[in-house]
Length: 120
Length: 247
Image 1 (cartoon, rainbow over the protein chains, first blue to last red):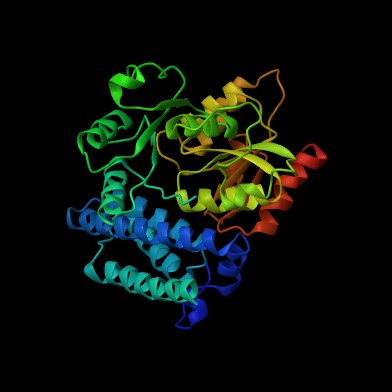
Image 2: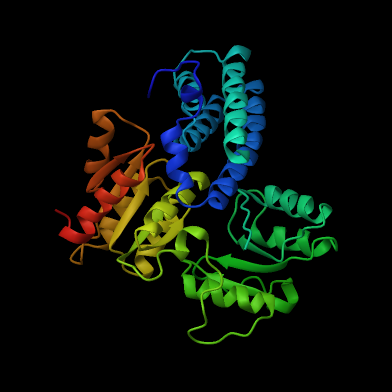
């Protein structure tokens, strides 16, 4: 997993998203739309899972978001989710509000970058 | 053709309602019969009960479930489709649901941008077992662009059934899937294929440690592709098995 930074490239890897665009801008737009809709739902489920202390569900959801975000070039979100998944699957480690905040902040950045790319 | 996907019955209902409220209702909804929480039959009932949702329904069933939803007229389903899904059958069902004529050799009017390019260059049939719909969509686009015909399933149990139903040139297997994970599915497929042709199985996993690779090979998989993958890496690995008979 690459290191997280704060540049645009850390948020959205241009080589990955441009490779996906080779299958057509319509394909990319649909893929991004689907990713955003699914991630919105998963983040809501993630918050609920943390609130009820269901670490297994937190780990499973974080793994799912990590998988899809990394595949579309969302490096920062993938790393946030990787860290959360690691915590969720470690014994005796609590998951706090800050952990979710990191994931949500990374997602907001990725959402903006994807939206910019798809409307440009 | 515009296509949207949903990962659950509730999500599908929300998507259908949003589209209907925006005066852009869906013409057809393809529903999986076996979904957790709200299954395909419950979803069918919910759609039929809402007059604002005018979508015609195609129900995708597992083998053996073809007739447990009643007749199409009774259930509100326009057509039923048995898994694994094949392109020709899907086209036929969509035409049936839309009330279009069905003719042998009919032009492929139902294609995604990713598969339409592959029509003249098909080089092999692959099974993709991947529960993450985004990753599934990306992998299908990459493989289809190179001419492969791809059957996609969402869990290990469906993969085992698909392999029992027909032969594949190679299988791409996600390791972490619901119901039956990739390791267990591989073991069952290998047990099915004792004395028969051994289909190459390529693991797809986010685990990058050496022990992840060892676990894949120990389960009976032949190779390993780390996620996230790019098109070149995916096609090189699959092509190695398809063109060089596993070498």
